[in-house]
Length: 169
Image (cartoon, rainbow, N blue to C red; front, top):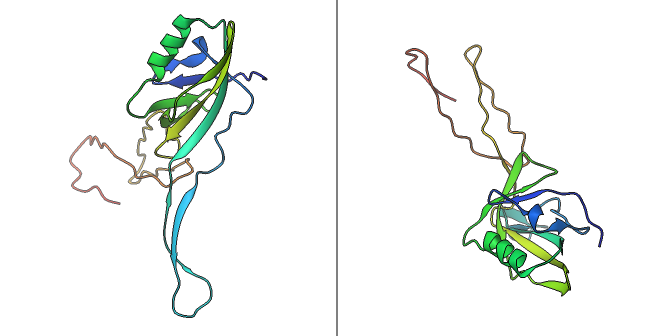
């Protein structure tokens, strides 16, 4: 297997102390959608009623070098979560997924070498920004731009320097 240089942080822990990601890693381009349509009378085609993204799985093959039982147990403790945690990939460090291992993580062992795969289940199939953005108004307007790939509601904390009487959209 070909190793790739990809830092992986899960639940604020760098997994590089146990595993190295290998060729075959992919996040995909877009998650699967569930699309609901209906037919109207005898007209051709259908009408879109609704659509929603389904959960997404990110498959991450890995190798373990200098494998020991202690390393296996340490890695197991880090990955043993009962709810999604932040998952950050080093090639996109300002984004994170809320993920958790989807299934059992088995790997093949040969003396001090092991290889396997982690399937990360992302119940929300998109990435989130790691940091908050701060905006300062220069006039009477603040424009907030979403650089992400999915429409996202925003939350504002407004600190007024004087009485203003109005905040609106």
